Length: 81
Image (cartoon, rainbow, N blue to C red):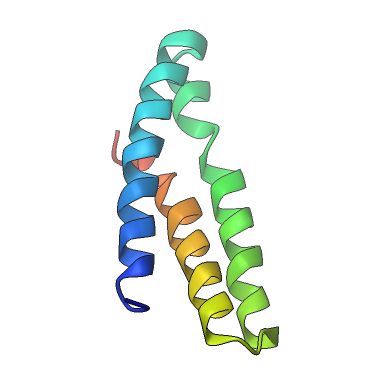
């Protein structure tokens, strides 16, 4: 279960990121609609990943890695587009 949670988080992030990228592209144009997730998603993911060495509970580390995968993979659909 612990090994699967980040994978599910990443898949969910990609699906949500693709949907949001499509909606924002229609509203704000190609440049802003696709670029809005790239910086913030990587920054939030980096903060979650950097917090992992300071956590003592393995389940909390798993949740942070899941959040890391979710947030970083949320920007991937706009990169592919």
